[in-house]
Structure formats: C-alpha cells, structure tokens
Length: 296
Image (cartoon, rainbow, N blue to C red):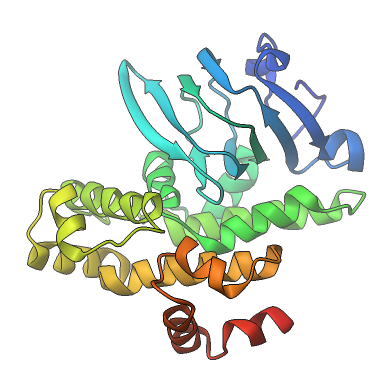
C-alpha cells in the first residue's frame, strides 16, 4: 500500500504484509487516479492473531460492510474490545501503532478511507487554530455519525476519475470531523461520564434488535436510570430512548433503501415488536411511512 504521494506519508506501511490479512478489491489511486484521498475496499481473512497496524500519520476511517466479530486491540499495553458490525465506524488515531486480533465465523468486508493529515491540520487552522485531540475525536466517531457513514460509503463506491472529487471529499470529511467530533481548546468534558455515554451507545448498537430498557442500559454502565438520562442527554442532546429509536429508524432506512426485505422482516431486525410499531415510529421521526420512504 505504498504510493508515491506528496499528500500522504505511507512509509510506515512499507513493511506491512497486507496480503496476509486482506484482499484489496478497490483502490481509488490505482483505479481512479486520486491523490488527495485514498479510498479502498477490502475482503478480510476470518481469523487474525497478531496483526501489527503501523503508526501512520494520517486519519484512517474504517466502515465495516459485512460480517460481525469482536475485535481486540492493544494500544500502549492495554487491550480493548469492540464489536465489528456493518455501519459501525472506527477512526484510527494518527501516530499510534496497534496490535489487533479477532476470530470471525463468516466473511468480513470493509471500506476504508485515509485523509491526509495536512488537510485536517489546514482545516483546523482555518477554523480558528484549534488544537486537534485525535483520541477524543476517535471516541466521538465511535459513538456514531450517520453523515460520515454515508460519506464513507459514497467515497468508497465513487467512480469519479481525477482528483477534484477526492480533494472536495477530503476537505468535507476533515471539516465535519473537526466541527462535530473535536472539542475546542480549553473545552473540558467529564471523562468518566463521557466513557459511560459511549459505552451506553455501544450497547445500543450491539443490541439494536433486542428489547432494551433504560434499566438494562443503566445497569451495564453502572449508573442509576436518573443519572443515565441526565448525563446522556447532556452529552448527546437526546434522551437514551430517543437516541435508541433514532438508531433503529436509521437502520430501518438503510434496509428499506438497500434491500428488498418486506417491512414485516425489517421490523424485528430493528428492534420493533411489529410492523405497525415500526411504521408508527418511522412516521413520527421521518414524516413518512416506510412504504412511502422505499418508493421515494
């Protein structure tokens, strides 16, 4: 994956045995001639024990498209776990090597986008010279962002040749990440509560199709229901119930748009007890019925 580019520093990948872990099915630089943004699609091997990810300088967005497994990642001596599942974004923190392992029961596919560090730093300067906290940005992205998800999907499937499209996409992604997922200098957040909000959101995503109560979520993150609602609403601007419903509606939208599944099958996949319950919630949140959304 080493290309001759003035925008990227890809030398850390020079010794990376990519063929051992993935089969690349698309590369925007090779297929489209892009220089300002690198978009790739991969088929992943089902089991990895010791994948050493290099400390690249640039921002690395990963969007799973197919498959589900538990990823274990070690950064700086500490292992962490997260669920790999379609639509769950991950942002690799620049300049930070990692060791990763997983075992999947079926195929894994992803689209991955690299944004040059220089584009992000330039955007940060134009936004007032803010210092970029990439670790905080990565944690925020992990909580979910439908706009970034759709943008990564679009970039990963684009067939525009030349660099204008790539340059514009890189600038948009950089500005959105900075304005939506990066705190300004001096802006502080309760770190412990932030971690619990992120854990609550991760639980919602992992159990989207299951019955899930406020008490279930509160127990998982070691908060009372009252405290959960308070800190969650302060961090996200929404109550846990509304946030969970929005996640379910967004999944229903994707299934209506990308599959031919009937509403009766989509409803339980999105955590709704019946097609009627999905239709009522869908109308409340989007203004249209599922059938009208699909036909549009």
